[in-house]
Image (tube, rainbow, N blue to C red; front, side):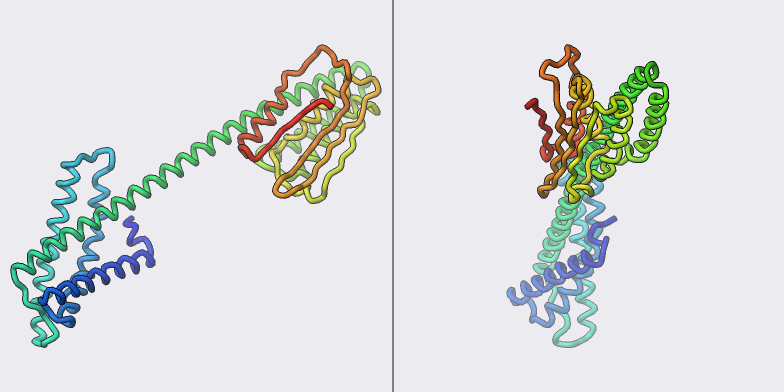
Length: 337
């Protein structure tokens, strides 16, 4: 649709511009001693407003030549030829409008039309229509740029969603395989505990299904998932695993990607608590320092760790997910104190 005619504001602004052009044309007639003010305004303003309506067709002229198919001669021929035709139409329009005003037989109506004035009107009409084409051409170019930016943004969003989906599919099997291994190991020493862990695992995955499709969840929901996971692990490790949480109430409604903390707790158990004879305490802390949310997980480690070293998949996954969602506005650090 013609952008000028898309809403009342644009229509009003367009006719205000053409009204100004009509007044300027009337002033030109007065300054060149062709007419008095009353005659010039009666002649120029209505004719210019009508021509302004006709100039709306310039939008379709500009759109008829896509940027990729343009050449200098084609543009000059189409734009220049169309502008000349509408310049002639406006000259004819001015001639007949002047004839009508002369029928009033009043001193304030009608002007003296001569060859010099007719040539001036032809040139003005051609230039005004050509200017209209150029204005529409600029608007079309800007609209193409905006559409390209929207398509690029949509493509980036789809790519990011696809990347996040891949990362999510890496998390759930990783946790599932570790949990099944734990259940398998527990069945030989504590069948009842293995059964309880299986039930807890099923309930855990039932809850994650509702949240895993969301891009972000509240920290309180993430901690609830973590508590469920820790319940599963406590069945396996018993008193060897202790957990202490210090959650700032202001941080509970902060949003973060789902299943973000669970892999970190899993690492704390796998590479920390498991290797300690007496076990230890995992501490989870959160606080808000606007606009940042800080979350920290501390766990003891063996001074002489086992030869089985992790691949760092969980931490790399965490970094990738945060970078995909937040870019440079996220930080992930870990160290052995």
